Length: 203
Image 1: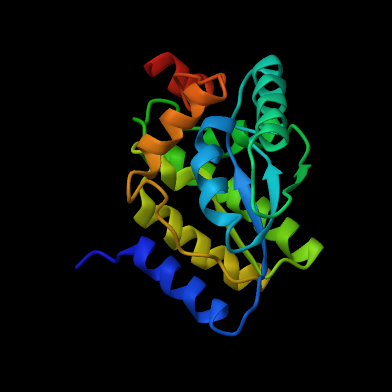
Image 2: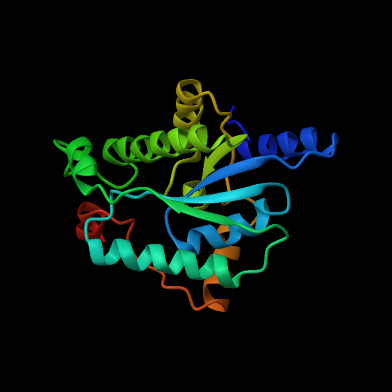
């Protein structure tokens, strides 16, 4: 039986809200469109720090465009609590290293799973560095991303960085559809591929 990660997230939120706590959360973000509905959900319950780290984006011009669009969204989208922003370095060579030999893998295959881990490990280290109470990623809002795999990797990284991973499946309860509507509302740049040159080629 598959786990309901959305329900698990809601139970975790209920557990600390009973005590009147508002914990901090580092949110790895891949782009503005995917972040829009996730931020709308999470800022009701957490002090969120957005972390942009995506070495899979093959073009530096595309990388900068997505980063700036995410910063614009944070500045323009109302939130119950202010959202902080930080980013890691642009390191496409790290993605190329983990993708070597998997160039012909389809979307959602082994190359993507390695990419998830690369980004979540960076997010876990950053969460530990800033002392966040939790960390998670926007990636599960996409129908093309496997929430089971993402949450499994998140749990593994959590053990390494000693920061709890917030289990989630942000596409549930119309999370993906909401991201589309918000993208239209804020006129967000919405790319048609994940970011790497292999996904762009397949697209």
